[in-house]
Image 1 (tube, rainbow, N blue to C red):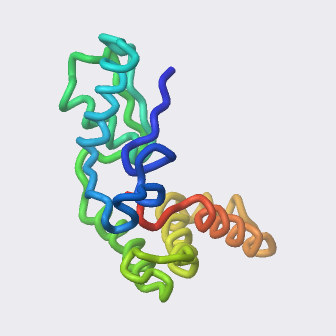
Image 2: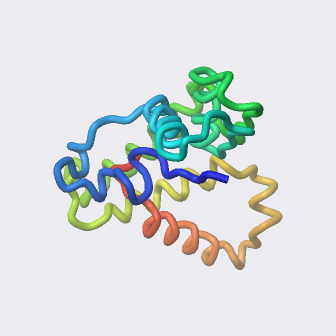
Length: 167
């Protein structure tokens, strides 16, 4: 099992940890770039000529679709989970809503923030919660009495686990 952080995410190469290209100075990265770097890791560093399978969730699902297109013979199976092969107008609206929430935060400062844009990240967490769960699921999982705890946890996890400059 190989688990690789994608370019622009994690601890290897990201807007939050690049000294020469911090925040918005970090180059734009496409799903294709992420998959190409993963292929290089597998072939050139790990010396593995073929994979049994590629699997990914969410953006990892998008990467799995890219593996299918770019390297169809490199793996036996591909399992994209909750990833779109092509973004729909709904997907674009969802992504843009999150971007707008972050950019509207007073701490955003065109991406050169010194403190996380917490208000924007809280709104992003709320948008994501609406998008990834059905109303009936949320109602079954959280009573009105437990709602504040759910919301606080969701927002806290997003604020502390998310860099607003990452893809």
